[in-house]
Length: 155
Image (cartoon, rainbow, N blue to C red; front, side):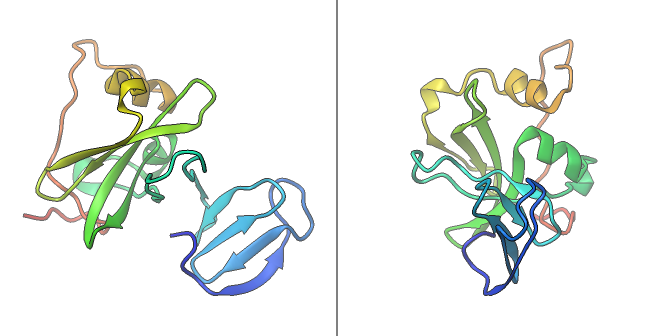
């Protein structure tokens, strides 16, 4: 997760900068294009600086739900820890792509909304449209059991 590792070195970034990418033990940040990357090089969608209180999370495959890491990344869905609990986080973006709100799912299926909930819109269409997936013809959203970061079900 950003802001937690120790600095290692500067490298070239995918934006074309020859040395703007600061590499840390667990993430990287480019000071030229202002993008965050996880330890494995995948881009992390960092909440807009004007939206305080939003969580930074990393996409991760949800094995028991048969959702790939790539799908989670495209849908703005990821995992992190919050208040000592592992949580799943769904980003809600405005038309420009800025994260305006998040829905946080705790292991015991308790939910929390952060950010501007009045602008969240329809969660089925928002997530599926951003991910390039067609919504269910029946307009249903299926919630599956909690999955931890290793893909195992938890009670």
